Image (tube, rainbow, N blue to C red; front, side, top):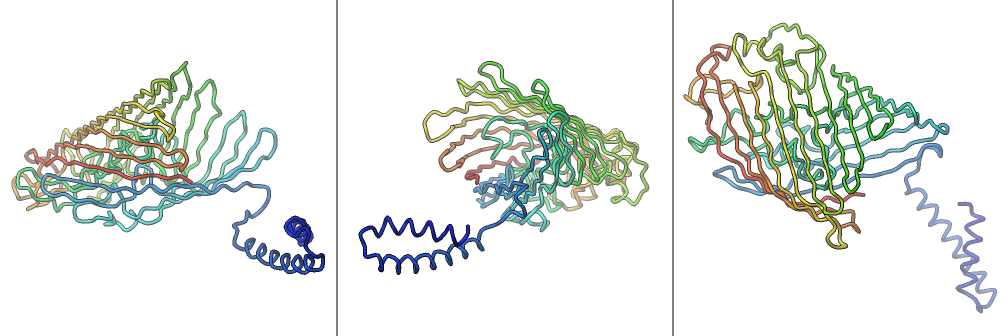
Length: 470
């Protein structure tokens, strides 16, 4: 805005306000007003964020998602204030520029923010910051892309892999606060409590460690790594994506999005494979044997592979919906590790989950969601966790024991209410978690001793909070 246009606008405004006033007085006031207005505008311009150029757009976006997490582990109960990691608080910047009729370039930078981590908190730590990196800021995206309308897009930088969220496709509001798969985000950092003696484990084994050791579902994708990714244009509702990660993995996914009368449907399937020297947590055994036991490993490209898929269908008139996801992880390398050498440990991990209910705008405030859900995980041995001598979960109290088999069953119910005028979602979810832990005693470094159960108490979780987008 120039001084000339500012003065002209100010003069017109004064002419209306001061109509009928003596001309000399009006001129004096106009001069003083415009001088003051120019100064105020200059100050405001200094405070406003500017784009670096006028060729690339800039959009600032984000959300805040804070909740109260109540828990009962069979003996103790408490309530923590947490950042809901199902869709954690974040802020982002994105933009794009047209190169021609068919070409486009763009970027995204997104940072997550956790005040307390809902998937890491436990009975001894209300913030979930045993690892300081699990709270505070984390870089979720930092990439650029080049896109051609008929040929697709190439993406380079830190972002999600091709199969990210392939096992949790969801058309409803529950994706923001209670994902039906990837259930670790709701309180599964809680430590296991023995059903035999009522004591907490001091070996650091939490509920999420019973799910693939890291809490990652079989078939679940990865994000936060430097990758090169390709995304095809949509063809009859189908689109393909594939990525190659600097952390030594590659994956491919096929997704579909469409409508059939009153039904909306989204679905997808994906496959991921680790390469030699992989640095991701999809298959712990395929990357950790050298670190844990000092051995030298010859890892083949097919030692670890992961399959996953899901669908979400919504009947728009009735509001009835069903979400379903499943995944399989195969870690062929586990039987060649020092820990499980010569044993018949199960090298597969499998899960399935379903969530169904109704989501409809019963009144003007926004959509209401009422749902029920079930989740089951079944998995083999783990190379990372050991139940030490004297631990609450140790079957005999002596010796070290390895995870031989784990099982997690979860059922839950919940409801949510959208408030459209505030871009807000209020929610309440309850989950009951049961588990099975089977251990095998270590003889030196090899788990070939007796096999025994370590009974654990059930876990109850109640989460209520709100998410607001901007």
